[in-house]
Image (cartoon, rainbow, N blue to C red):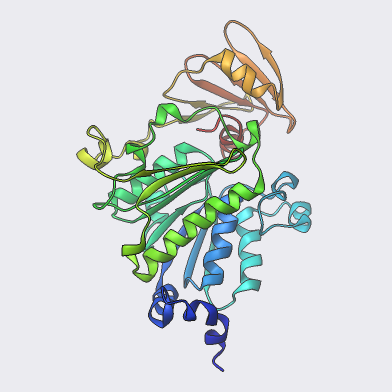
Length: 338
């Protein structure tokens, strides 16, 4: 029996995929940005499904707190401090050696996103912050590439497939200024919600890649598996003032979006957000995970990792204790969330 037929035999029997769909999957090229909780589940599903080329991009390394929900990693990866993209590639190659997996250890930003999406058919969101999600949204709509959004925090999840010229974009549903304050590192997350969100993302991706566009859900799905709630917002017209859909402007691709600078000689990175910071609200959020000191002018949070976050009302955040921009942006995304 043909080895590939045996591997994918159950998918081939499924009428929604069949031989033609499997062939399409084998020729498909995808990018997964973020190889953490969502990204590892996405990669696992799509590599096992036989997607021919999978590019993984992530800036972080494996830590023990990841093992509760990031399914491709183990304690040996933590011990070796392996970059997540590299650890995931090594594991995935033992699962399906017949496909091409490219691992890129990088901070995905305005300078490299257009290079990362080049040549792919679909981009999947495995990230944990909205700054990167808006970057993916804007670059995908600029280059006419479908974008599969997913988010998971606490017991809540959201997912949607956005297709340029066919659906609204992420900005039509979520305003950048409304996305602060809740991350897995500040309010926690349970593993099952991650699996559910990434499974919704994966099945929409497979439908699109095999050409079953009539089966696409066509909605932004939200749910809370702890409180047994779910809701679907059907995709209709794009938002009237959406800069991406109506004006072909792509704000996340501009250089002044969350400005990042190194303060020379101070072992400090400054990240400047467009939105102001409510120090009272952030004190309540961060005191659960850090030693917090508040003054009328600033908020200082000493993290377990050793670094300090200093928040100012005007939107500035100092990450003290590192001069590594990638490390600083990782901590910023982990605790601030944008």
